[in-house]
Image (cartoon, rainbow, N blue to C red; front, side, top):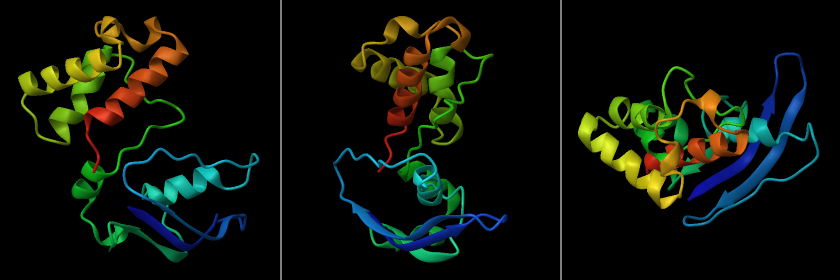
Length: 155
C-alpha cells in the first residue's frame, strides 16, 4: 500500500504545485489521479516515484518511509511508466524490455529474454519484439512502455 500524508511541494521559483495532499493506494488496484492541467498531478507522482523530494509530509510504502528505502530496492518495488515513454531508439522492443531486467534485477540474458517475450505475448504485442521505437505507433510504444514496467514486477 502507498500512503501519502500531507505532502507539500514547491518549485524553486515559488510555484506551489502540491499543497497538503493526503491519499492512499491500496494494494492490487488500478487508480487514476485526475485534475485540471497544472493542478499538481505529475508533481505528486514524481514525489511518489522519488524523483522529487517533498518539502513536507510523508510517503509510505507498506508502512515504510520511501526515503528510508535503499534506491535499488525501491526501484524494484515501484514501477514507473513515464508520460514520455523513454524507449531507447537504438534498441528494439525486446532489447528495451530486457535492459532493466538484466541491469536492475540482475537476470541473465536468457532469463530476461524469456520473461520479456512472455509479457509481450500476454499483452498481445509479441509481433513488435524486433521493431525499433521509430517503427511502431505511439499507442504501440505506450503499450511497450507499460509492458516494460510490468515486466519488472513491482511489489
